[in-house]
Length: 458
Image (cartoon, rainbow, N blue to C red; front, side, top):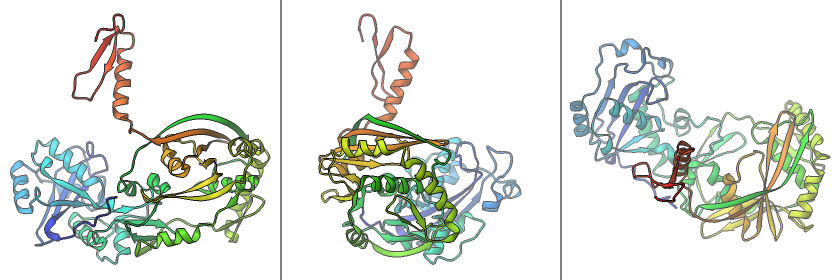
C-alpha cells in the first residue's frame, strides 16, 4: 500500500498553473503560463497569443481578454531553455492541481515543436485527495483552500495567484493522503493510516484511493440465472442512492433477513485515520427510517413528497417481486437463515466488505444499476471467502425495471489488455471478407502476424 508521506520541502518543487480557453488541450488555446518557485519566491507569468481559437471564451473564469493577448508572442526554444535553467524544471517536481495543466503544456509543446516536455516530471496533487467519483462537485480547489484556512481565494482566477494558493494547499496536506468522506452535512477529511482497513466498495468508487492499494486483479465468469420484470405507473428510479437503499430494504424485509450490527467495528476502524478538517458540501440530506413493512418514513415535513413517491414505488414492486424473493430464498440460499450486512475482513490485504445478503454457502450483492458484473468482481471476491457469489442488478426504463440475477465466479487472474483487444477487433473487422486473418498482435509498434484462411500459412 503506497501511503508513504510525500516530501513537502520547497526546494523539491516548482508550482505551475495554466489558464486556458476551454478544457480540450488539442482544440482550445493555452492563454497563460505561470510558474512559482516556493523556496526563493521567483515567479514567471506570461500571456500567450490566440492560436487555435478566434476569441477568448473564458474571461469570466480567468479575467483574460482578447486585448490582453494582443501583440503577445509564443514561446520559442530559447524561452523554454531559460525557464529550465531558472526554475530547474528538469530537476524539480512540477506541482499542479488537476489534470488540465500537464495536458495543455504537453500539447502546446508538441504544436510549437518545443523540446523539453519529456524531461519534466509533473505531480497532480489532487490525487492525494481520495473521494468518491459520485461526489457533488463541492470539492473544488477554492473550497478546499477555505476549508484549510488559506486566504486569497478570488472569484476570478489568475495563474500566479493560483500557483501560490496551490502551494499553500499542498503544504496543508503535510505530505499525507487524505480520505474525504461525505457525512450528512459536511465533508470529513482524515489523513489515511496504514492500519486502516479499506472498504472494498471504496476501491471501485474512490479512484485515487484505489491507486494506493496494490492487490491482485480479480477475474470473473458470469451467467444469468434469473430475470423478473416489474412494471407500473409508480415504478421509477430515484436520483442519488434512494432506489438502492429502499429496494434493498424491501427485499431484506420480505426475506426476513437479520441485520448484523457492525457499528463498533466500523467506528473504530475509521478512527485510525487522523481527522484534519471538514467543510460543508452542497448535497441536501433526506433523513428517513426504514420500517418493518418495507416502507420508509422521513423525519422532516418538507420531505413528505419524497416519502410518498418512494413508498408508491415500493408498494407497486412488493407483490410483483414475490417470485424474485422466493428464488433468492430457496434457490440461492437453500432456505437457510439469511444475514444482511455480514462483515468480512481480509487482514492480509487490509480490505473489508459488507455483504448485502449471505449465508454460510452463498453471497448475494444487490446493485441498483445495470452495470456489467466486471464492475463488481472485486467486491464479490472479498465478500465470498470461498462461497458461491451472485449479483443482482436492476435495468430501469420508464415505468418498469428488470431484476437480473447472475451467478459470478471470481478469482485472482490476469488483467485483460483492453486496448489490445480493441485493436485486434478493429483489424479483424478490416480483414473480414479477405483471405487472411489476424494470427498474433503484440502492440501498435510491432509487426502483425496474419494467417491464410485457406492453407493456414502464417
